[in-house]
Image (cartoon, rainbow, N blue to C red; front, side, top):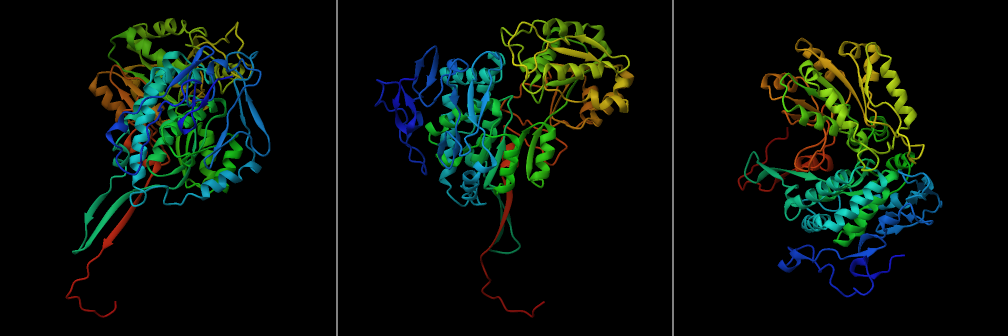
Length: 578
C-alpha cells in the first residue's frame, strides 16, 4: 500500500511532504507570468523498490506480484471509471512469467457500457474545443502543458518509471524503452510555448476587389478517435494524442489492452500538469466494441496504428474516415559499394531483431548485393543475432504470434525451391513465457530472388510477421530491375533503406520506389525514427504521419476557406439580373 496524501491537482505525494507547492498556478488564457515558466518538477517518493511519481497510482515493481493487481480505469467526461456497468474485466498476464499474478486488470467495456462515451463525444461540436476563431487561449494552454509534460518525462526518475512500465507490458531492452521515453519527451518539448499555435497558422489571398480576401484555416474535426498499438505503448499514442489536442479536437483513446496501464499513467501526468480532465476520454475494450463506438458516436475521423487487416476493416466501418499508419513489410537494399561491414551488420541486426522485430518499421526483407554476401555480411549478422537473450531483454516474447504460428511461416518459406534457413528457427527453451505468446530465436530465411517473384510464392515471402524474423535474398548487378519489381509489388510502403553511397544506385532505387520514410546512405536504417522527421506510409490517401508539424496538420485538421467580402463601392449601381 502506498502511503500518501492528496496534493494539489489530485496527484499523490508521500505523507509528510504535504503543503509543498508542487505545481504553481497558471492562468491559462494569457501568457503565464515569468515565475510560472520554471515550475518545480514532480516530487517523487520511494515505495517498495521503485520510484513512483506523485501523480501515479501504481508501483511498477509490484506488478505481477500482487494478489490483487492494479486496476486500470476508463476515463470518460472528466471522471475516472473503475468499473463499467456490465462489470466485465480483462486480466493481463505477465508476458515474461506465466506463473506470476496478472500485471493488471482493466475494464472489458461492452456495447451496453458505451453510452457515457457516446454522450461525451456528442458534447463536442464539429468546430472542436478550440479553433483559430474560438478559444484561442487554449493554443497557449497546450503549449504550456506540452512543455511541462516534456520536462516531466525528461526527469530521470520519471523516465525510469515509464521505461519500467513499458518493459513490464511489452518486454524490450532498457535501452529501447528509455529511447521511447526520450523521443516522446523531445516531441513534447518541441511543441512547448508558441509552437502549438504555429500549427494553426493561416494564409490569406487578395480578392478581386477592395474589401475582398480569402483566408485558409486549419480546422479541427471535433470528436475524434485514436486506436493505438501495443509495440510503442507510450510514444505512438502520445504523439497522436497530443497532435489531436493541439489542433482543437476531443479524442477518445483506445490503447491496446496488453499495455493499457502506460497511457493510464500518462493521462494522470497530463492532469497533473494542467490538462482539463474532460479533454480526453480513455476507453479500454476489445476491438469489436471499439468498432461499435465508431459507428454509434459522431466520430469525425479515426487515427489507427496497427495491422493492415484491421485498417481495411476500419476503412469500411468508417466509410473511409480513417487515417492509417498500418503494417509495413519494410525492405533494406545493400547496394554494390561494400564498406564498414561490421557496422552494417550491426545495424541490420538492430533493424530486424530489436524489440523482437515488433516494430512497424522492422526490417522484414534484406536484399543483399552479391558483393556484400562475398564480404561475409550474413555470417556477421548471424553472429550478432546469436548474442540476443531473455536475460538482458535483447530477446523476449512475441505478443501477436504464437511459437507455432512463427514456425509454420518459416516452414512455408522453406518450401520455396532453393530456400534455406540461415540461422535461428527454433523456439526458446528454459523460460516461463505464456503459451499464447511466441518465444523464438532471431531467424532469417534465404529465398532466391527469382523464386520469390513467382506468383505462387510472392505473397508468402512478403507477408509481415511481427516477430524476430526476416527474409534474405541476393542480387547481381544485372538483377536490380528484379529488386525494383519486388518493391513495386509489395502492398504496404512504410519504411525502407538504401544502404549505399553510390549516387547512381541511390537514384535508381529512390526514383522507382514509394516508401513514406526512406533512409539512404551507408548508415541507412529502417527503424529508430526520432521526433525530428516525418514517419508514415506513402502511396495511400489514408496514410497518417506522426511526429512533425506537417503530420499533425495533415492528420488532425482539415482545410477551411473563409472568403471575406466587406466593402460595397459608394458608386455601385444596380444592374439587370443575369
